[in-house]
Image (cartoon, rainbow, N blue to C red; front, side):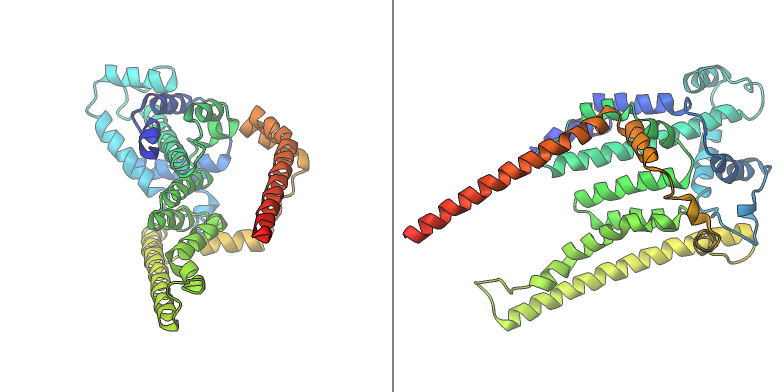
Length: 362
């Protein structure tokens, strides 16, 4: 049974616990390699928590390229951790600090233990990202006939340099990666509403609207399943009920389903967008639309020339870093796949000829 065999991917199973432990254990070993992560996200978070911090030009009201709606959830989580740490004895905090940072924090005698809070927040990001991996892999496992093995995946993914840097990164691109996994997992489990919801959060609430291209197929597939397929083929190939009235009835039902999906998506998008604008209004002191601002800035200022101009060697190195030897094996497997396709095609042709000969003899 698919559901029973996928229990190994649930939280609490031995292998999932081990994988999460590896991710959390390495979360604070990864350096911050992007200055944007420091000054555009950790620094504003520090301002929300402690009322001090430097402001980058992206947060200046005349530009307003960044949304505070992306900072607020992390600020709420940080406040919760602060409340918990205020109740924990110093010795316990020292042990937790040694576990997450490798050494006891030097600020234990201070009122606020910022290094420990920082390490805890990065570990939280790593946990959420790891959970999205496990949920996506479980959905793939349940959807495919040939079941992939989680042990193989965790062994390979644990060695991925890309995951090592991105899982705990406090960046819109990493958050989009996590939400994309959740979206794909939901759609593989036939929950298109949640799939679209995660996509809308990624596009509207994270502050990186360019990721919208990732969710075009998500929306199209939801509409296709929700009624577009039936609208196209409603009854036209039916031998049992081919009356015009029944076809029109099915087409009308399919059209209503499509309209419902579109209206539901629009309503959710409006709720998310208005929430983001309300939060930004409270910080910027005026109505701003950060999604439009960042899109116009990147499109009109020549910033798009930074992307897609790398030499071919860049992509080869990227594949090797992220997929390790699996990338090499994948390239080497291409001739074998071509040979397999040719053999299957030959068998199919031979079988069809045999069927046709039997039909002719009859």
